[in-house]
Image 1 (tube, rainbow, N blue to C red):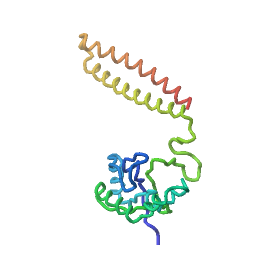
Image 2 (cartoon, helix red, strand yellow):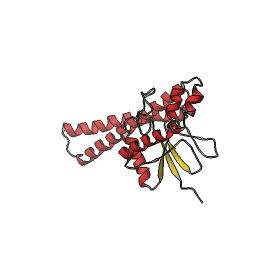
Image 3 (spheres, rainbow, N blue to C red):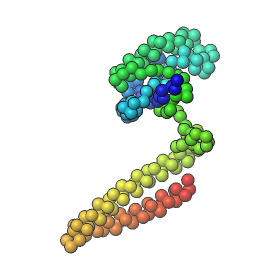
Length: 206
């Protein structure tokens, strides 16, 4: 019998705010609105959503990270059913229903929303997006700068279009105010061309 496909959402740092070293394993942070809505949208499409979290691994992660960890801490993590119930109560409150909780990836999982994932295109070895581990920090900064420049260019383009419309509508109104529209059009266009040239250089460098 074919398994029903499902979508995983990480809890800490994705659906809920997480601060490293947070006081209790039985605490869940406040919901992150953007990702709560994203999760609801996936649910509206008819997909089963599961909470994908190491909180229900029975303490294995803690033991691997530090074999000398206090046994009382591990015992807390072994209370899997209690932790699962706590998470499901949180999902009822913020997502409207009790969602399954797991720490196991299987063949039926078709997507995972997570803050630590680097996505690889299937069977190709190509990274989709940014490989933040292997990309030098200076290049990451360079990419962010490029994004900012693109945003500025898009804004300038809108300004040019606006001035062009005003100039067209008031072509025969030769007062100083309308002349300013024409001057603004020329100035903005010059800046746009300059920024466009810069974007080309940036893109070629990447």
